[in-house]
Amino acid sequence: MRIRAGDITPKRVYDALQRRLEDIPDKRAWTHSPLGVQNRAGLEKFRDIHKRERCFLMANGPSLGRMDLSPIKDEITIGLNRIYLIFDQLGFQPTYYAASNELIIEQFHEDIRKLEMPKFIGWHRREYLLDDKDVLPENTCFLRDKLSLEDTFSKDVTKGITSGGTVTYHMLQLAYFMGIQEVVLIGLDHNFKEQGTPNKMEVRTGTDENHFHPDYWPKGSKWQLPDLYRTNIAYANARKAFEADGRKIIDATPGGKCEIFEKTDFASVLNTSGSGKEL
Image (cartoon, one colour):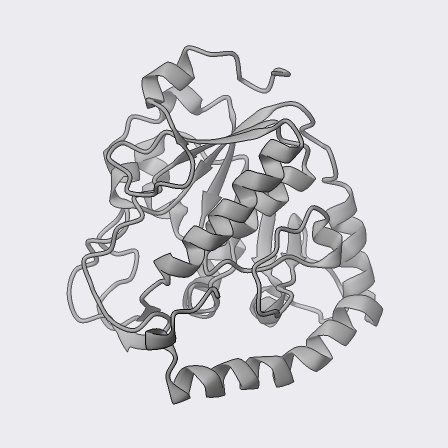
């Protein structure tokens, strides 16, 4: 089970049922609406676009803000959620951007709209990025969560993906679809100071110490504690899928607490072939 018995609350059950009701028209629009048809055609363009190449997937942990990432400026990179807060520090912008957290999209969609690189956004909050409900925005594709009791690993994002409780899992599915041979994870600290019920909406009252920037969730913003138990199960599924196809995911996060992926030192990764070349 992806959810521990102690984490099941009436509110969480109610929210799950509500999401499934809301998903009925969303699923139909994904398949049949003009926007849905355009969107799936847009996603199709990314199938195997980076076959046998590697990418750096930049998760959201505090370690990311302490790293010198200038050596990967010419690599394929995927930045998540509020990565734009440290663009000046990075000295470059990621190749791709992704946001699937509904609270991120709802509260910071104006920031997201300004980003010029190809963007992958959660289908369920697509209205925040649309000027016309029937027209796909420039440089933007949407990814649809398939609501299920298991976070299976989707190898074809045009048919939907599963959440795993984190945008990082979303992007592992996208990286596979893109044909990526090796994903290097950085910023995957997998460690939160706050304790409590996963996915319970709260209002931030203090400085955010769980992410790469203190204003990632600024005071007064709505946020949710992640479900690390669930993400561990999802990450294991991702590792299994990659390795079954002769590919791999490695974790180069300094001091990262995730125990699912093969660990490596960031400096050693930089000494291997990359920069968009086939591995």
